[in-house]
Length: 251
Length: 277
Ligand SMILES: Nc1ncnc2c1ncn2[C@@H]1O[C@H](COP(=O)(O)OP(=O)(O)O)[C@@H](O)[C@H]1O
Ligand SMILES: Nc1ncnc2c1ncn2[C@@H]1O[C@H](COP(=O)(O)OP(=O)(O)O)[C@@H](O)[C@H]1O
Ligand SMILES: [Mg+2]
Ligand SMILES: [Mg+2]
Image (cartoon, rainbow over all chains, first blue to last red; front, side, top):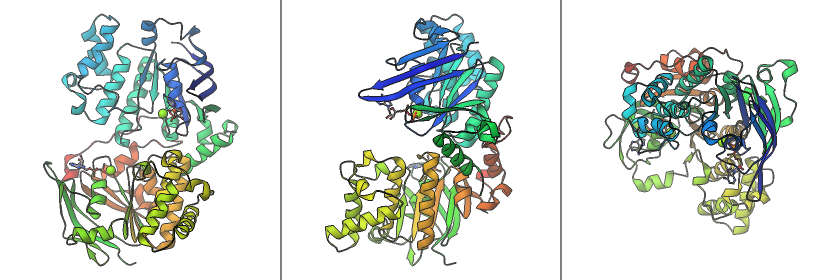
Protein backbone atom coordinates (compact mmCIF):
# COMPACT_ATOMS: atom_id res chain seq x y z
CA UNK A 1 0.00 0.00 0.00
CA UNK A 2 1.36 3.35 -1.06
CA UNK A 3 0.66 7.01 -0.33
CA UNK A 4 -0.11 9.51 -3.12
CA UNK A 5 1.86 12.71 -3.35
CA UNK A 6 0.64 15.47 -5.69
CA UNK A 7 2.78 18.58 -6.17
CA UNK A 8 2.11 21.66 -8.29
CA UNK A 9 -0.31 19.95 -10.63
CA UNK A 10 -1.33 22.40 -13.36
CA UNK A 11 -3.06 22.00 -16.69
CA UNK A 12 -4.03 24.41 -19.45
CA UNK A 13 -6.60 23.44 -22.06
CA UNK A 14 -6.74 25.73 -25.07
CA UNK A 15 -6.10 29.19 -23.68
CA UNK A 16 -7.55 28.45 -20.25
CA UNK A 17 -5.60 27.32 -17.23
CA UNK A 18 -7.91 24.78 -15.58
CA UNK A 19 -5.76 23.76 -12.60
CA UNK A 20 -3.36 26.06 -10.79
CA UNK A 21 -0.56 24.36 -8.88
CA UNK A 22 -2.56 21.75 -6.96
CA UNK A 23 -0.71 20.02 -4.10
CA UNK A 24 -2.01 17.46 -1.64
CA UNK A 25 -1.04 14.16 -0.03
CA UNK A 26 -3.18 11.09 0.45
CA UNK A 27 -2.18 8.44 2.97
CA UNK A 28 -2.21 4.78 2.06
CA UNK A 29 -5.63 3.32 2.84
CA UNK A 30 -7.26 6.71 3.30
CA UNK A 31 -10.44 8.05 1.67
CA UNK A 32 -9.57 11.59 0.64
CA UNK A 33 -12.38 13.91 -0.51
CA UNK A 34 -12.41 16.60 -3.19
CA UNK A 35 -15.23 19.13 -2.92
CA UNK A 36 -16.07 22.52 -4.41
CA UNK A 37 -18.38 24.28 -6.83
CA UNK A 38 -19.13 22.79 -10.22
CA UNK A 39 -16.46 23.65 -12.77
CA UNK A 40 -13.82 24.12 -10.07
CA UNK A 41 -11.62 21.35 -11.50
CA UNK A 42 -12.38 18.31 -9.32
CA UNK A 43 -12.94 15.90 -12.20
CA UNK A 44 -9.94 17.34 -14.01
CA UNK A 45 -7.70 16.38 -11.09
CA UNK A 46 -8.90 12.78 -11.34
CA UNK A 47 -8.50 12.79 -15.12
CA UNK A 48 -4.90 13.96 -14.69
CA UNK A 49 -4.17 11.31 -12.04
CA UNK A 50 -5.60 8.57 -14.26
CA UNK A 51 -3.74 10.04 -17.26
CA UNK A 52 -6.99 10.37 -19.21
CA UNK A 53 -5.46 13.83 -19.58
CA UNK A 54 -1.73 13.85 -19.93
CA UNK A 55 -0.70 17.40 -20.82
CA UNK A 56 -0.30 18.46 -17.20
CA UNK A 57 2.73 19.79 -15.39
CA UNK A 58 3.77 18.93 -11.88
CA UNK A 59 4.68 15.80 -10.04
CA UNK A 60 2.58 12.84 -8.94
CA UNK A 61 4.28 10.15 -6.89
CA UNK A 62 2.70 6.89 -5.82
CA UNK A 63 4.75 5.26 -3.11
CA UNK A 64 7.63 7.48 -4.17
CA UNK A 65 7.41 6.32 -7.77
CA UNK A 66 6.70 8.81 -10.53
CA UNK A 67 3.24 8.10 -11.98
CA UNK A 68 4.17 9.20 -15.47
CA UNK A 69 7.21 6.93 -15.56
CA UNK A 70 5.20 3.84 -14.60
CA UNK A 71 4.73 1.34 -17.42
CA UNK A 72 1.11 1.33 -18.64
CA UNK A 73 0.34 -2.17 -17.42
CA UNK A 74 1.51 -1.46 -13.90
CA UNK A 75 -0.21 1.91 -13.83
CA UNK A 76 -3.53 0.24 -14.74
CA UNK A 77 -3.00 -2.21 -11.90
CA UNK A 78 -2.30 0.68 -9.55
CA UNK A 79 -4.92 3.34 -10.36
CA UNK A 80 -8.45 2.90 -11.67
CA UNK A 81 -11.32 5.34 -12.03
CA UNK A 82 -15.09 5.12 -11.45
CA UNK A 83 -17.26 7.72 -13.15
CA UNK A 84 -20.39 9.51 -12.03
CA UNK A 85 -22.80 8.42 -14.67
CA UNK A 86 -23.46 4.67 -14.59
CA UNK A 87 -25.53 5.09 -17.78
CA UNK A 88 -22.86 6.72 -19.91
CA UNK A 89 -19.80 4.90 -18.63
CA UNK A 90 -20.72 1.33 -19.63
CA UNK A 91 -20.71 0.23 -23.25
CA UNK A 92 -24.38 -0.36 -24.16
CA UNK A 93 -23.68 -3.43 -26.31
CA UNK A 94 -21.23 -5.15 -23.98
CA UNK A 95 -22.43 -7.73 -21.51
CA UNK A 96 -21.18 -7.54 -17.94
CA UNK A 97 -18.92 -10.51 -18.71
CA UNK A 98 -17.33 -8.72 -21.67
CA UNK A 99 -16.95 -5.52 -19.64
CA UNK A 100 -15.05 -7.40 -16.96
CA UNK A 101 -13.01 -9.71 -19.18
CA UNK A 102 -11.71 -7.02 -21.58
CA UNK A 103 -9.22 -5.49 -19.12
CA UNK A 104 -8.05 -8.99 -18.12
CA UNK A 105 -7.51 -9.94 -21.75
CA UNK A 106 -5.69 -6.67 -22.57
CA UNK A 107 -3.36 -7.17 -19.62
CA UNK A 108 -2.99 -10.94 -20.25
CA UNK A 109 -4.04 -11.77 -16.73
CA UNK A 110 -4.31 -15.47 -15.80
CA UNK A 111 -7.29 -17.13 -14.06
CA UNK A 112 -9.81 -14.86 -15.72
CA UNK A 113 -12.96 -16.76 -14.72
CA UNK A 114 -11.87 -16.92 -11.08
CA UNK A 115 -11.10 -13.21 -11.01
CA UNK A 116 -14.46 -12.34 -12.58
CA UNK A 117 -16.31 -14.53 -10.09
CA UNK A 118 -14.47 -13.06 -7.15
CA UNK A 119 -15.08 -9.48 -8.31
CA UNK A 120 -18.79 -10.10 -8.86
CA UNK A 121 -19.03 -11.43 -5.32
CA UNK A 122 -17.01 -8.46 -4.03
CA UNK A 123 -19.47 -5.95 -5.48
CA UNK A 124 -22.50 -7.95 -4.43
CA UNK A 125 -23.83 -8.95 -7.84
CA UNK A 126 -25.25 -12.41 -8.61
CA UNK A 127 -23.17 -14.37 -11.14
CA UNK A 128 -26.26 -14.69 -13.35
CA UNK A 129 -25.87 -10.97 -14.09
CA UNK A 130 -22.71 -11.68 -16.11
CA UNK A 131 -24.87 -12.26 -19.18
CA UNK A 132 -26.86 -9.05 -18.80
CA UNK A 133 -26.44 -5.85 -20.78
CA UNK A 134 -26.48 -2.34 -19.26
CA UNK A 135 -30.12 -1.66 -20.22
CA UNK A 136 -31.13 -4.73 -18.19
CA UNK A 137 -29.62 -3.25 -15.02
CA UNK A 138 -30.84 -0.63 -12.56
CA UNK A 139 -28.74 2.47 -11.86
CA UNK A 140 -27.29 0.97 -8.71
CA UNK A 141 -26.49 -2.33 -10.43
CA UNK A 142 -24.72 -0.45 -13.23
CA UNK A 143 -22.62 1.42 -10.70
CA UNK A 144 -21.70 -1.93 -9.12
CA UNK A 145 -20.58 -3.12 -12.55
CA UNK A 146 -18.54 0.06 -13.02
CA UNK A 147 -16.89 -0.55 -9.65
CA UNK A 148 -16.30 -4.19 -10.58
CA UNK A 149 -14.62 -3.11 -13.80
CA UNK A 150 -12.34 -0.80 -11.82
CA UNK A 151 -11.56 -3.58 -9.32
CA UNK A 152 -10.93 -6.38 -11.79
CA UNK A 153 -7.23 -5.54 -12.22
CA UNK A 154 -6.88 -5.36 -8.43
CA UNK A 155 -5.63 -1.77 -8.26
CA UNK A 156 -4.66 -0.21 -4.95
CA UNK A 157 -6.06 3.23 -5.69
CA UNK A 158 -9.60 4.02 -6.83
CA UNK A 159 -10.45 7.48 -8.16
CA UNK A 160 -14.17 7.98 -7.59
CA UNK A 161 -15.82 10.83 -9.48
CA UNK A 162 -19.19 11.52 -7.82
CA UNK A 163 -19.89 7.78 -7.74
CA UNK A 164 -23.35 8.18 -6.20
CA UNK A 165 -24.56 11.56 -7.49
CA UNK A 166 -26.81 10.04 -10.13
CA UNK A 167 -28.36 7.54 -7.72
CA UNK A 168 -31.34 7.64 -5.38
CA UNK A 169 -30.52 8.02 -1.70
CA UNK A 170 -31.36 4.38 -0.90
CA UNK A 171 -29.13 3.14 -3.72
CA UNK A 172 -26.43 5.61 -2.71
CA UNK A 173 -26.48 4.02 0.75
CA UNK A 174 -25.82 0.60 -0.78
CA UNK A 175 -22.92 1.86 -2.92
CA UNK A 176 -21.33 3.85 -0.07
CA UNK A 177 -21.60 0.78 2.17
CA UNK A 178 -19.97 -1.30 -0.56
CA UNK A 179 -17.11 1.20 -0.93
CA UNK A 180 -16.54 1.34 2.84
CA UNK A 181 -16.65 -2.41 3.09
CA UNK A 182 -14.18 -2.92 0.23
CA UNK A 183 -11.86 -0.40 1.81
CA UNK A 184 -11.99 -2.10 5.19
CA UNK A 185 -11.45 -5.57 3.73
CA UNK A 186 -8.95 -4.79 0.99
CA UNK A 187 -7.23 -1.61 2.16
CA UNK A 188 -7.95 0.49 -0.90
CA UNK A 189 -6.94 4.13 -1.12
CA UNK A 190 -9.72 6.35 -2.46
CA UNK A 191 -9.82 9.85 -3.83
CA UNK A 192 -13.49 10.71 -3.95
CA UNK A 193 -15.09 13.72 -5.61
CA UNK A 194 -18.47 14.70 -4.22
CA UNK A 195 -20.64 17.79 -4.13
CA UNK A 196 -22.35 16.47 -1.01
CA UNK A 197 -20.49 17.20 2.22
CA UNK A 198 -22.66 14.71 4.10
CA UNK A 199 -21.25 11.98 1.84
CA UNK A 200 -17.73 13.34 2.38
CA UNK A 201 -18.25 13.37 6.14
CA UNK A 202 -19.48 9.79 6.00
CA UNK A 203 -16.57 8.50 3.90
CA UNK A 204 -13.51 10.74 4.29
CA UNK A 205 -11.18 11.69 7.10
CA UNK A 206 -9.68 14.58 5.17
CA UNK A 207 -10.79 16.58 2.15
CA UNK A 208 -9.63 19.45 -0.06
CA UNK A 209 -11.81 22.37 -1.13
CA UNK A 210 -11.50 23.49 -4.74
CA UNK A 211 -12.51 26.83 -6.21
CA UNK A 212 -11.88 28.03 -9.76
CA UNK A 213 -9.00 25.64 -10.36
CA UNK A 214 -7.27 26.37 -7.05
CA UNK A 215 -7.08 24.13 -4.04
CA UNK A 216 -8.01 26.67 -1.37
CA UNK A 217 -7.78 24.56 1.77
CA UNK A 218 -7.23 21.01 2.99
CA UNK A 219 -9.35 20.14 6.01
CA UNK A 220 -10.15 17.27 8.30
CA UNK A 221 -13.58 15.91 9.04
CA UNK A 222 -13.51 18.03 12.19
CA UNK A 223 -14.18 21.12 10.04
CA UNK A 224 -17.64 19.68 9.42
CA UNK A 225 -18.39 18.41 12.88
CA UNK A 226 -17.43 21.54 14.81
CA UNK A 227 -14.01 20.75 16.27
CA UNK A 228 -12.73 24.27 17.05
CA UNK A 229 -9.09 23.89 15.97
CA UNK A 230 -10.07 22.18 12.71
CA UNK A 231 -12.35 24.93 11.35
CA UNK A 232 -11.96 26.23 7.78
CA UNK A 233 -10.22 29.59 7.37
CA UNK A 234 -10.62 30.26 3.68
CA UNK A 235 -13.80 32.31 3.05
CA UNK A 236 -15.10 30.05 0.27
CA UNK A 237 -14.44 26.90 2.26
CA UNK A 238 -16.38 28.40 5.16
CA UNK A 239 -19.23 29.47 2.89
CA UNK A 240 -19.48 25.99 1.40
CA UNK A 241 -19.40 24.27 4.77
CA UNK A 242 -21.89 26.68 6.36
CA UNK A 243 -24.31 26.34 3.43
CA UNK A 244 -24.02 22.56 3.52
CA UNK A 245 -24.66 22.37 7.24
CA UNK A 246 -27.63 24.75 6.95
CA UNK A 247 -29.01 22.63 4.12
CA UNK A 248 -28.42 19.36 5.93
CA UNK A 249 -30.13 20.36 9.14
CA UNK A 250 -33.84 20.71 9.58
CA UNK A 251 -34.97 24.25 10.39
CA UNK B 1 -57.03 28.98 3.43
CA UNK B 2 -58.50 29.12 -0.06
CA UNK B 3 -58.01 26.00 -2.14
CA UNK B 4 -56.14 26.65 -5.39
CA UNK B 5 -55.96 23.09 -6.57
CA UNK B 6 -58.04 20.05 -5.66
CA UNK B 7 -56.96 16.65 -6.96
CA UNK B 8 -58.89 13.49 -6.19
CA UNK B 9 -57.77 10.04 -7.28
CA UNK B 10 -55.57 11.13 -10.14
CA UNK B 11 -54.23 8.19 -12.15
CA UNK B 12 -51.96 8.36 -15.17
CA UNK B 13 -51.17 5.41 -17.41
CA UNK B 14 -48.60 5.75 -20.17
CA UNK B 15 -49.85 3.80 -23.15
CA UNK B 16 -48.17 0.44 -23.41
CA UNK B 17 -46.94 0.47 -19.79
CA UNK B 18 -47.84 -2.48 -17.57
CA UNK B 19 -48.86 -0.46 -14.54
CA UNK B 20 -50.00 3.14 -14.06
CA UNK B 21 -47.21 5.69 -13.47
CA UNK B 22 -49.49 7.55 -11.06
CA UNK B 23 -52.05 5.63 -9.06
CA UNK B 24 -55.00 7.34 -7.31
CA UNK B 25 -53.16 10.37 -5.98
CA UNK B 26 -55.20 12.90 -3.99
CA UNK B 27 -54.21 16.24 -2.46
CA UNK B 28 -55.31 19.82 -2.06
CA UNK B 29 -53.14 22.88 -2.39
CA UNK B 30 -53.68 26.33 -0.92
CA UNK B 31 -51.34 29.32 -0.78
CA UNK B 32 -48.57 27.12 0.50
CA UNK B 33 -45.50 25.15 -0.50
CA UNK B 34 -46.23 21.50 -1.11
CA UNK B 35 -43.32 19.12 -1.65
CA UNK B 36 -43.62 15.91 -3.64
CA UNK B 37 -40.70 13.64 -2.80
CA UNK B 38 -39.74 10.11 -3.73
CA UNK B 39 -37.20 8.13 -5.70
CA UNK B 40 -36.71 8.38 -9.44
CA UNK B 41 -39.53 6.73 -11.32
CA UNK B 42 -42.03 7.12 -8.47
CA UNK B 43 -44.26 9.34 -10.61
CA UNK B 44 -43.50 12.85 -9.31
CA UNK B 45 -42.90 14.53 -12.67
CA UNK B 46 -45.86 12.71 -14.17
CA UNK B 47 -48.12 14.33 -11.56
CA UNK B 48 -46.73 17.76 -12.52
CA UNK B 49 -47.18 17.13 -16.22
CA UNK B 50 -50.69 15.76 -15.72
CA UNK B 51 -51.73 18.99 -13.95
CA UNK B 52 -50.53 20.97 -16.95
CA UNK B 53 -52.00 18.32 -19.25
CA UNK B 54 -48.67 17.89 -20.95
CA UNK B 55 -49.04 14.14 -21.52
CA UNK B 56 -49.89 13.17 -25.08
CA UNK B 57 -48.98 9.52 -24.72
CA UNK B 58 -50.84 8.81 -21.49
CA UNK B 59 -54.39 8.41 -20.25
CA UNK B 60 -55.29 10.69 -17.36
CA UNK B 61 -58.24 9.84 -15.13
CA UNK B 62 -59.40 11.46 -11.90
CA UNK B 63 -62.51 11.95 -9.84
CA UNK B 64 -61.63 15.61 -9.65
CA UNK B 65 -58.84 17.87 -10.90
CA UNK B 66 -59.99 21.40 -10.22
CA UNK B 67 -57.73 24.45 -10.55
CA UNK B 68 -59.65 27.45 -9.18
CA UNK B 69 -62.57 27.87 -11.59
CA UNK B 70 -61.12 25.48 -14.18
CA UNK B 71 -61.95 21.79 -14.43
CA UNK B 72 -58.63 20.53 -15.74
CA UNK B 73 -60.17 17.24 -16.84
CA UNK B 74 -62.79 18.87 -19.02
CA UNK B 75 -60.79 21.87 -20.27
CA UNK B 76 -60.20 21.94 -24.01
CA UNK B 77 -56.66 22.14 -25.37
CA UNK B 78 -57.50 25.69 -26.41
CA UNK B 79 -58.40 26.59 -22.81
CA UNK B 80 -55.22 24.90 -21.61
CA UNK B 81 -53.17 27.13 -23.91
CA UNK B 82 -54.61 30.10 -22.05
CA UNK B 83 -53.67 28.58 -18.69
CA UNK B 84 -50.27 26.96 -19.27
CA UNK B 85 -47.37 29.33 -18.76
CA UNK B 86 -49.82 31.98 -17.60
CA UNK B 87 -52.01 31.10 -14.63
CA UNK B 88 -50.05 27.90 -14.08
CA UNK B 89 -46.30 27.82 -14.66
CA UNK B 90 -43.54 25.28 -14.48
CA UNK B 91 -39.86 25.63 -13.53
CA UNK B 92 -37.61 22.82 -14.69
CA UNK B 93 -34.24 21.55 -13.53
CA UNK B 94 -32.13 22.97 -16.32
CA UNK B 95 -33.04 26.47 -17.46
CA UNK B 96 -30.69 26.17 -20.43
CA UNK B 97 -33.20 23.95 -22.23
CA UNK B 98 -35.96 26.53 -21.83
CA UNK B 99 -34.01 29.48 -23.21
CA UNK B 100 -33.15 30.14 -26.83
CA UNK B 101 -29.36 29.74 -26.99
CA UNK B 102 -28.77 32.40 -29.64
CA UNK B 103 -30.72 35.29 -28.11
CA UNK B 104 -29.82 37.60 -25.24
CA UNK B 105 -31.60 36.52 -22.08
CA UNK B 106 -32.91 40.05 -21.44
CA UNK B 107 -34.54 40.19 -24.86
CA UNK B 108 -36.20 36.84 -24.17
CA UNK B 109 -37.68 38.05 -20.89
CA UNK B 110 -38.80 41.31 -22.53
CA UNK B 111 -40.43 39.43 -25.37
CA UNK B 112 -42.28 37.19 -22.95
CA UNK B 113 -43.56 40.29 -21.18
CA UNK B 114 -44.62 41.91 -24.46
CA UNK B 115 -46.59 38.79 -25.31
CA UNK B 116 -48.88 39.60 -22.38
CA UNK B 117 -48.76 43.40 -22.35
CA UNK B 118 -49.30 46.11 -24.95
CA UNK B 119 -46.32 48.38 -24.52
CA UNK B 120 -43.26 49.80 -26.22
CA UNK B 121 -39.95 47.96 -26.39
CA UNK B 122 -38.44 50.63 -24.18
CA UNK B 123 -41.01 49.96 -21.49
CA UNK B 124 -40.49 46.20 -21.86
CA UNK B 125 -36.79 46.67 -21.27
CA UNK B 126 -37.42 48.74 -18.18
CA UNK B 127 -39.86 46.14 -16.82
CA UNK B 128 -37.38 43.36 -17.56
CA UNK B 129 -34.62 45.10 -15.62
CA UNK B 130 -37.09 45.48 -12.76
CA UNK B 131 -37.95 41.78 -12.91
CA UNK B 132 -34.28 40.78 -12.91
CA UNK B 133 -33.74 42.99 -9.87
CA UNK B 134 -36.69 41.37 -8.11
CA UNK B 135 -34.97 37.98 -8.32
CA UNK B 136 -31.90 39.48 -6.63
CA UNK B 137 -29.77 39.92 -9.73
CA UNK B 138 -27.49 42.75 -8.70
CA UNK B 139 -26.28 43.95 -12.12
CA UNK B 140 -29.38 43.51 -14.32
CA UNK B 141 -28.02 45.69 -17.16
CA UNK B 142 -25.09 43.34 -17.64
CA UNK B 143 -27.16 40.17 -17.30
CA UNK B 144 -29.73 41.54 -19.81
CA UNK B 145 -27.08 41.40 -22.54
CA UNK B 146 -25.79 37.90 -21.77
CA UNK B 147 -26.46 34.79 -23.83
CA UNK B 148 -27.75 31.65 -22.10
CA UNK B 149 -24.38 29.88 -22.23
CA UNK B 150 -22.79 32.79 -20.39
CA UNK B 151 -25.02 32.60 -17.33
CA UNK B 152 -24.33 30.27 -14.42
CA UNK B 153 -26.90 27.69 -13.34
CA UNK B 154 -28.09 29.79 -10.42
CA UNK B 155 -28.41 32.91 -12.57
CA UNK B 156 -30.29 30.91 -15.23
CA UNK B 157 -32.76 29.67 -12.64
CA UNK B 158 -33.33 33.24 -11.38
CA UNK B 159 -34.04 34.35 -14.94
CA UNK B 160 -36.57 31.52 -15.32
CA UNK B 161 -38.26 32.57 -12.10
CA UNK B 162 -38.39 36.18 -13.33
CA UNK B 163 -39.92 35.02 -16.62
CA UNK B 164 -42.47 32.85 -14.95
CA UNK B 165 -43.64 35.67 -12.68
CA UNK B 166 -44.36 37.99 -15.62
CA UNK B 167 -47.80 36.47 -16.05
CA UNK B 168 -48.81 36.53 -12.36
CA UNK B 169 -49.38 32.77 -12.04
CA UNK B 170 -51.51 31.42 -9.19
CA UNK B 171 -49.89 28.00 -9.29
CA UNK B 172 -46.22 27.21 -9.88
CA UNK B 173 -44.87 23.69 -10.33
CA UNK B 174 -41.12 23.51 -9.80
CA UNK B 175 -39.67 20.16 -10.92
CA UNK B 176 -36.23 19.63 -9.33
CA UNK B 177 -35.62 23.41 -9.52
CA UNK B 178 -32.27 23.37 -7.74
CA UNK B 179 -30.95 19.84 -8.32
CA UNK B 180 -28.32 21.06 -10.78
CA UNK B 181 -27.11 23.91 -8.55
CA UNK B 182 -24.24 24.11 -6.08
CA UNK B 183 -25.37 24.07 -2.47
CA UNK B 184 -24.28 27.68 -1.88
CA UNK B 185 -26.45 28.86 -4.79
CA UNK B 186 -29.30 26.46 -4.07
CA UNK B 187 -30.23 28.23 -0.84
CA UNK B 188 -30.24 31.64 -2.55
CA UNK B 189 -32.52 30.49 -5.37
CA UNK B 190 -34.87 28.78 -2.92
CA UNK B 191 -35.16 31.85 -0.76
CA UNK B 192 -35.94 34.03 -3.79
CA UNK B 193 -38.64 31.60 -4.86
CA UNK B 194 -39.93 31.49 -1.32
CA UNK B 195 -40.18 35.26 -0.94
CA UNK B 196 -41.99 35.74 -4.24
CA UNK B 197 -44.41 32.93 -3.57
CA UNK B 198 -45.26 34.31 -0.14
CA UNK B 199 -45.55 37.92 -1.31
CA UNK B 200 -47.91 37.00 -4.11
CA UNK B 201 -49.89 34.25 -2.44
CA UNK B 202 -48.95 31.69 -5.07
CA UNK B 203 -49.54 27.99 -4.54
CA UNK B 204 -46.24 26.18 -5.08
CA UNK B 205 -45.59 22.51 -5.78
CA UNK B 206 -41.93 21.52 -5.43
CA UNK B 207 -41.04 18.17 -6.96
CA UNK B 208 -37.75 16.80 -5.69
CA UNK B 209 -35.87 13.63 -4.86
CA UNK B 210 -34.12 15.60 -2.11
CA UNK B 211 -35.49 15.04 1.39
CA UNK B 212 -33.49 17.93 2.82
CA UNK B 213 -34.97 20.33 0.31
CA UNK B 214 -38.60 19.50 1.05
CA UNK B 215 -37.92 19.33 4.76
CA UNK B 216 -36.35 22.78 4.88
CA UNK B 217 -38.38 24.54 2.27
CA UNK B 218 -41.93 23.17 2.14
CA UNK B 219 -44.92 23.40 4.44
CA UNK B 220 -46.30 19.99 3.61
CA UNK B 221 -44.84 16.90 1.94
CA UNK B 222 -46.32 14.04 -0.06
CA UNK B 223 -44.12 10.94 -0.22
CA UNK B 224 -44.55 8.93 -3.40
CA UNK B 225 -43.64 5.32 -4.02
CA UNK B 226 -44.43 3.41 -7.23
CA UNK B 227 -47.02 5.94 -8.35
CA UNK B 228 -48.81 6.20 -5.02
CA UNK B 229 -48.75 8.69 -2.18
CA UNK B 230 -47.75 6.48 0.73
CA UNK B 231 -47.73 9.27 3.30
CA UNK B 232 -48.58 12.95 3.66
CA UNK B 233 -46.98 15.01 6.43
CA UNK B 234 -46.26 18.50 7.65
CA UNK B 235 -42.62 19.10 6.66
CA UNK B 236 -41.66 19.69 10.29
CA UNK B 237 -43.01 16.23 11.15
CA UNK B 238 -40.90 14.40 8.59
CA UNK B 239 -38.74 12.91 11.32
CA UNK B 240 -41.88 11.41 12.82
CA UNK B 241 -42.87 9.71 9.59
CA UNK B 242 -44.91 6.54 10.11
CA UNK B 243 -44.50 4.79 6.79
CA UNK B 244 -41.52 2.40 6.63
CA UNK B 245 -40.63 3.70 3.16
CA UNK B 246 -40.32 7.29 4.40
CA UNK B 247 -38.42 6.09 7.45
CA UNK B 248 -36.13 4.03 5.23
CA UNK B 249 -35.35 6.97 2.93
CA UNK B 250 -34.53 9.22 5.88
CA UNK B 251 -32.31 6.60 7.47
CA UNK B 252 -30.41 5.92 4.23
CA UNK B 253 -29.34 9.54 3.98
CA UNK B 254 -25.88 10.31 5.39
CA UNK B 255 -25.85 13.39 7.62
CA UNK B 256 -23.08 15.79 8.51
CA UNK B 257 -21.87 14.72 11.95
CA UNK B 258 -23.69 11.42 11.65
CA UNK B 259 -22.29 8.10 12.84
CA UNK B 260 -19.79 6.21 10.70
CA UNK B 261 -21.65 2.91 10.79
CA UNK B 262 -23.00 1.37 7.59
CA UNK B 263 -26.04 3.25 6.28
CA UNK B 264 -29.32 1.38 6.81
CA UNK B 265 -30.40 0.00 3.47
CA UNK B 266 -34.01 0.23 2.41
CA UNK B 267 -35.82 -3.12 2.40
CA UNK B 268 -38.57 -2.65 -0.15
CA UNK B 269 -41.86 -4.41 0.45
CA UNK B 270 -44.31 -5.29 -2.31
CA UNK B 271 -47.33 -4.13 -0.32
CA UNK B 272 -46.09 -0.50 -0.40
CA UNK B 273 -47.21 -0.37 -4.01
CA UNK B 274 -50.57 -1.93 -3.26
CA UNK B 275 -52.02 -0.94 0.07
CA UNK B 276 -54.93 1.54 -0.09
CA UNK B 277 -54.13 5.13 0.82
N1 LIG C 1 -11.70 18.84 -22.22
C1 LIG C 1 -11.84 20.09 -21.78
N2 LIG C 1 -11.46 21.15 -22.55
C2 LIG C 1 -11.60 22.41 -22.09
N3 LIG C 1 -12.09 22.74 -20.88
C3 LIG C 1 -12.46 21.74 -20.08
C4 LIG C 1 -12.36 20.37 -20.47
N4 LIG C 1 -12.82 19.60 -19.45
C5 LIG C 1 -13.19 20.46 -18.48
N5 LIG C 1 -12.97 21.74 -18.85
C6 LIG C 1 -13.23 22.94 -18.02
O1 LIG C 1 -12.44 22.78 -16.87
C7 LIG C 1 -13.10 23.34 -15.74
C8 LIG C 1 -13.13 22.32 -14.64
O2 LIG C 1 -13.99 21.26 -15.02
P1 LIG C 1 -14.22 19.98 -14.11
O3 LIG C 1 -12.91 19.45 -13.68
O4 LIG C 1 -15.12 19.08 -14.87
O5 LIG C 1 -14.96 20.60 -12.87
P2 LIG C 1 -15.75 19.88 -11.69
O6 LIG C 1 -15.54 18.39 -11.81
O7 LIG C 1 -15.18 20.47 -10.44
O8 LIG C 1 -17.20 20.26 -11.87
C9 LIG C 1 -14.47 23.78 -16.22
O9 LIG C 1 -14.44 25.17 -16.43
C10 LIG C 1 -14.64 23.05 -17.52
O10 LIG C 1 -15.46 23.79 -18.39
N1 LIG D 1 -43.16 9.48 -21.65
C1 LIG D 1 -43.22 8.33 -20.96
N2 LIG D 1 -43.65 7.18 -21.53
C2 LIG D 1 -43.72 6.05 -20.85
N3 LIG D 1 -43.40 5.91 -19.55
C3 LIG D 1 -42.97 7.02 -18.90
C4 LIG D 1 -42.85 8.28 -19.57
N4 LIG D 1 -42.40 9.19 -18.67
C5 LIG D 1 -42.24 8.53 -17.51
N5 LIG D 1 -42.59 7.23 -17.64
C6 LIG D 1 -42.57 6.21 -16.58
O1 LIG D 1 -43.45 6.62 -15.57
C7 LIG D 1 -42.93 6.37 -14.28
C8 LIG D 1 -42.87 7.65 -13.48
O2 LIG D 1 -41.92 8.53 -14.10
P1 LIG D 1 -41.69 10.01 -13.58
O3 LIG D 1 -43.00 10.67 -13.35
O4 LIG D 1 -40.75 10.66 -14.52
O5 LIG D 1 -40.99 9.74 -12.17
P2 LIG D 1 -40.13 10.74 -11.25
O6 LIG D 1 -40.35 12.14 -11.72
O7 LIG D 1 -40.64 10.46 -9.88
O8 LIG D 1 -38.71 10.29 -11.40
C9 LIG D 1 -41.57 5.71 -14.51
O9 LIG D 1 -41.73 4.32 -14.42
C10 LIG D 1 -41.22 6.13 -15.90
O10 LIG D 1 -40.38 5.16 -16.51
MG1 LIG E 1 -16.98 16.87 -12.17
MG1 LIG F 1 -38.88 13.57 -12.36
